[in-house]
Image 1 (cartoon, rainbow over the protein chains, first blue to last red):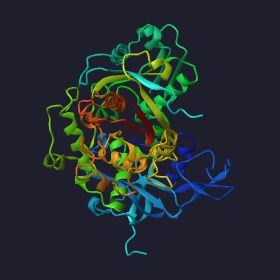
Image 2: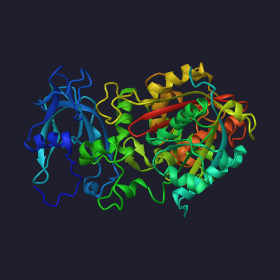
Image 3: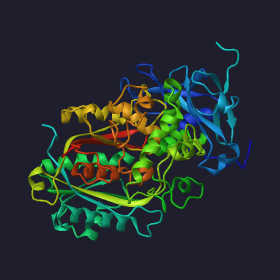
Image 4: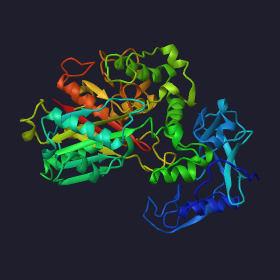
Length: 140
Length: 389
């Protein structure tokens, strides 16, 4: 753990804070509607499918695939200067929700749509753990 | 009832476009507004409505500085760079219903000297960034992974589109090169007398793939203003009116998160375009020109598809062979656009479209009768105005 962590940490307000609290427990959980069982992310008060205000935080398989990405060559936050170039990647989880993350073990020039990946957690401060992804080797 | 031909643009005003105006935003906006009143043949006493595209000046201060004593309608549009075009919709609603007679739509900022992207996201930035639904998403879910600015998060759209449809760097470059070529005829353009060729474009340093520095628009200081009134009032003013023939705004779903869209390339303009074309009773093929919001080259390509100029995945091919040049089938950004004239949140595109239809453009499309202006902002909000003379 790095006490000098100098990258932006998630704000963790309201429902967003609940998502990040699960991450701190090294659990990737998304909201799932109690009415129609639809998974969702980012966190929302209501279900866009059925309108229900009831949900539970259910654990994701943590497996998904690369949906899109950008390889950033000029950081707009000084905390990322030493990592250039780095990729901000959209991952589509098996549950259908998508999230932004890093894929740590694929060279940026080798990223492709559909690359299988799985989650792990990096403890960046005493309060915050960030989900990141590694490639799933060996294929399906 | 629709808004078709119920309102006209009758006044245009601009300031100089610079990097370092040395003026307050309020001063820039006031100067552009007075220029627009003078252009129309109106005075501050005639203006009784404001539609402000974004929170850069406050309506109370603007009225007090311009001498507008009887303000009957004032509202603000918050769709980022889509706001100026969307503001025309609100202005048309106000004048067509009699809520206001002459509505001023002004926009200005010090986009270089105060609001540069590279200065605003640092940990010790002087001012906290403005909060909205989009900044909530960035701060909770994008910024922890180093995606903090439009050049980075719009790139997700471009990368996937490019992966699926094979758009080349040269195709993207057509947008930048066309804007720069048009700016060479426009003395107001920041990039006037600074021509660009394909070799220089391709050698431009990478920002966030697939965007190079020269895929990005300018950062400039400046302001524009237009005045909207009814066709009846427009007849007595200085210039032939330019009619708002079709107008609509649209929002991607969800609008506050880019990754979680069921149809990734369905942007705000995808929703706005059928409304605006349907209202006007025309099609994309009828357009004599298009001023397309060009924050980044690829965003123009996505909008050409969303507006219906070509099918999904066909925009790269569409822009080849000079088709978007001023003498091509669909001239775009004839003033130089955000890439080469100035970044005034696309309000300069509204000004340019009106100039084209008055026959006063620096790269005039001969005999043009119909054209459109798009807006793009926030996470892909969109707007579309179809204008005629």
